[in-house]
Amino acid sequence: MPSASASSVIGVLVVDDQYIVRRGIISTLADIPGVNCLGEADSGEQAIVLARRLRPEIVLMDLRMPGIGGLEAARRIGIALPATRTIAVTVCESEPPGRLGRSRIAACVGKDVRAPELEATIRRVLSPRRVATPPASPGARPANPFD
Image 1 (tube, rainbow, N blue to C red):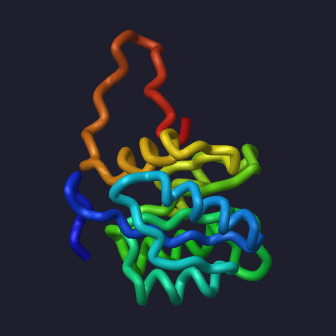
Image 2: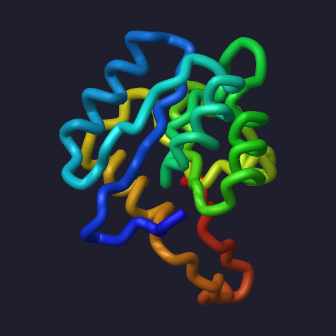
């Protein structure tokens, strides 16, 4: 899968079991230059099938859905398509960061996210990964990648 660069269009798959939420996310994506919604799914099962067919750079995924939830769907998509990054779009703030990471969730945004913040998150998760640097002072904790 080709990687997204500043000049290429970023393909996104939107996954949420609620129709009106999917439409809102798709409408928000339309306000972001260089981002294109490739498709939408209403379940984790459908997301896995569509991701393999459409090969998006980004999957915007609800975590709480009937059937295969977003965490398991993200894990399976991440295994099948390692270059695809999944961003959790959720109202739930209770998922432990370790569980999100094991599910191959690259970032998490709230369902009230606005276009500029969503764009920044998409571009951040697609940027080349940097090597972690040690904390600046003894006892300081490194930044949480899910903040």
